[in-house]
Length: 119
Image 1: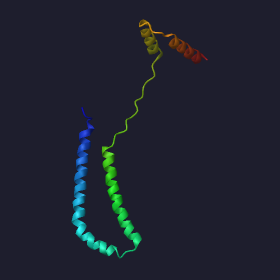
Image 2: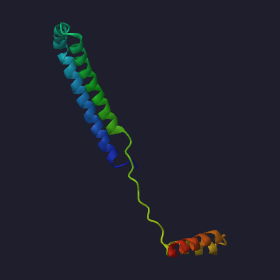
Image 3: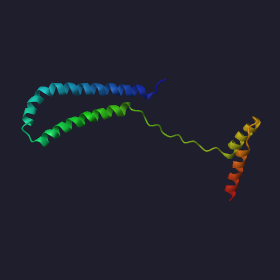
Image 4: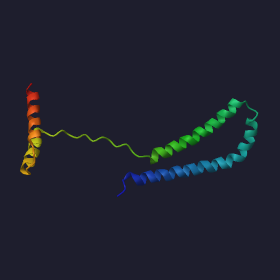
């Protein structure tokens, strides 16, 4: 079963695609006027021409970043795991004893922890 937020992310991607298409349509519609404007801009100094080109590249990079942010993997929040209580540990050791498993190292560790707690 896909995650619940997957359809929402796909819907947001579709909206982003429609916005990108609308922006592209706007750019293509304004291209005719932009050619005339570019002829005027060519009369400007080189740094001003580079500024206009930089703004265009920044806008495209911003749209690409938004798309990657929407579709990228989400960070998982760390799950806090509670430490087992002394009673739970003893129950586990008893269960291991019933299975005929060696538990002397675990019991020695519990005794060492008890000794440290008293000290």
